[in-house]
Image (tube, rainbow over all chains, first blue to last red; front, side, top):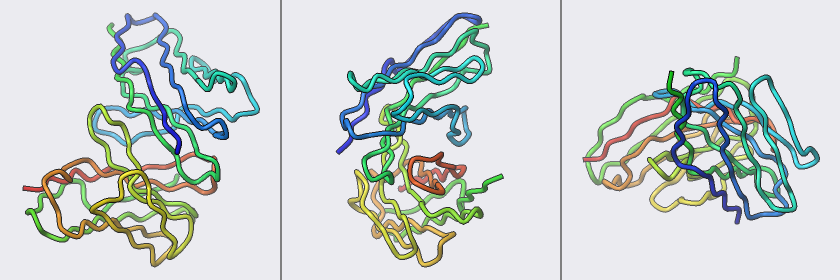
Length: 112
Length: 112
């Protein structure tokens, strides 16, 4: 089955700097890659997703890149702000489309 | 707004008890999921359902069962609770494959 690895587990940046979180997946047939943000004490919420027919997607300060050949995808946050502090999860959806496998999460700290 | 509601925010149960965790979604979603969230392990899929009365095992189904008698409700059952089932449990739903998952607020279960 699908396996998703996520790095780093913890990331600390200064406000205004960029943050990058990287994930790799094992199933070459996976075709949907969402990213979720979980603030302390709250439920995970989708912040951006990318499908296998696209190499990059941007939404304001957030971008995701996908390299299907290498089976890795990354989240880029520019001009980080304290409210970006949270746990971020990458995920990959298995062939057949029902089973989403999550990475272990990255705890991002943005220092003011 | 999609609402996924879990019946309890906190639960404390004794070892050996039968435990029911309930989840209801109000957006007519086809797919529903139960995840377990533990520090450093991310979200691990316990069971999912893509239709009424249909269920599929996730990655860690041992010690759990599920029930989906109605489209909007998905129940997770711990047949005989054990201390290693102490965790945060998250329910989620999605409309189709390869689409956003909407999460409930989570149930923090402690088994003593």
